[in-house]
Amino acid sequence: IDALPPEWKTQNVISALMSSAILTMLQIDVAADPISRTTALISLVCALMCLLFGSLYIIRFATK
Image 1 (cartoon, rainbow, N blue to C red):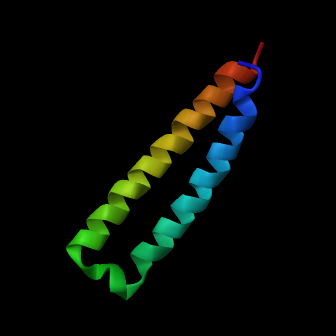
Image 2 (cartoon, one colour; image 1 turned 30 degrees about the vertical axis):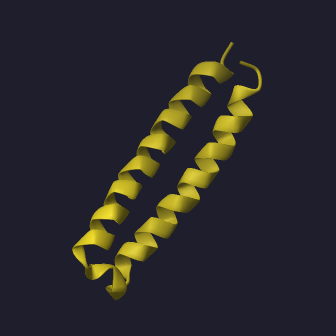
């Protein structure tokens, strides 16, 4: 359990970077077709859930 918080912090950084990349992709005109937009929205929801659960796990396991 001692090694988990640094891994969750790294995962949160990666999820935050992915969230910003997905939001950028949603803003360009090329991603206007339904398949790309739906895939990007599902990926964004997954990245945000990963951020939420990662933050909760950091708070839960970092306190002793």
